[in-house]
Image (cartoon, rainbow, N blue to C red; front, side, top):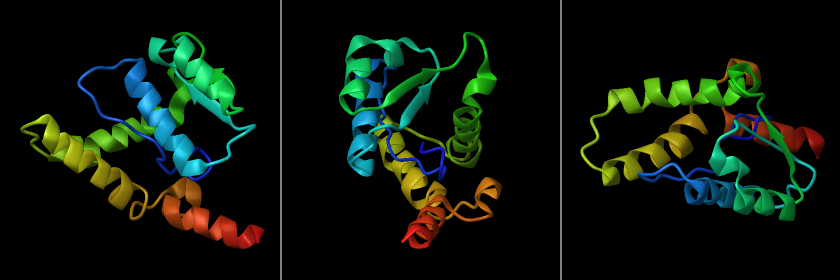
Length: 140
């Protein structure tokens, strides 16, 4: 998630939480954003985010690394809030029968609903997509 706009820019789905899953989401975000040199990547202290391959990819992109303090969920409040939204507005409302159902529904929710239709009070009640467009216009 891009904390500036609350837009979800990278994700991956798997039956396993591991470095490959995290790397797939990171790579998607890097493609989505292009140049990210100097940005800060914040995560919790999960082993998938601290492993050599993940850290190496962040460093190669010129991204500064930030991790939550041990046992402090408030450091990652935006991500925790997003996960709650994903669960309550998508996951708990659907009866998934297979991983294929999940792989079809979750990207739809992220791209079509969360990024383009869901209003955020932190963004002046704009969607992440609209907020980014408004910021691009105001900078130009």
